[in-house]
Length: 112
Length: 126
Image 1 (cartoon, rainbow over the protein chains, first blue to last red):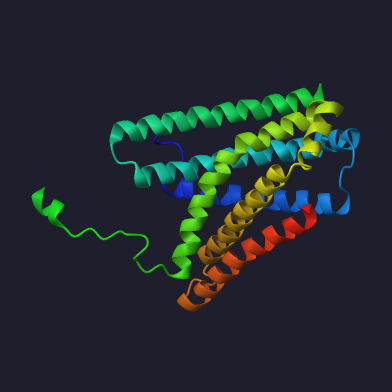
Image 2 (tube, helix red, strand yellow; image 1 turned 60 degrees about the horizontal axis):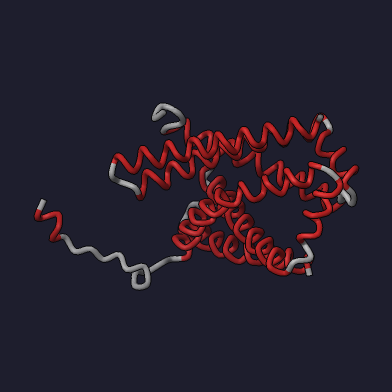
């Protein structure tokens, strides 16, 4: 687990995911400003369109990677006893995995 | 070990000098933690909004609630500050504004910009 995103790789993941999320949020805001989805069918049709589904899935993948690196840094900075540190990292890993599974389910179900 | 314990520890946050860059930096970290905590709530709302017309209407209806609207505005501030401070970091990674003076100025821009975006959200939601 310690081999996952350390050093330069973590730094790069943090930046690349940030840049992608920045563009995604900008796109989302522009869409909501220009053509806000006023009803359920419009919202759902937009969210389940091929390009938006892919972009949303990529957004959440970036978000999870970004959150992992960021919260891992916070844990390593402030939690020094090894046992607590490992427990918290494992807990964080489980939480992020659960969130990922939830996202997959939402995107999957919305297409059904 | 004993000499380590005798070292003076002076970390009273209320008494140490906090330059504006430090304030932006620590706020970036704190907002990051809050955003991570906000992820499950946001995903829950996304889930509800896509389940069907009734649950979609429930999500829209939440915006009639003043407490929910306040939470949204705080969330917007947290997100805006984190994003702006993040852009500042990315720019200083490529050596834009990494000198002391420009970095102080951009720190102010981030701190005030975050509040400005939150006020904009307040205007939209009121």
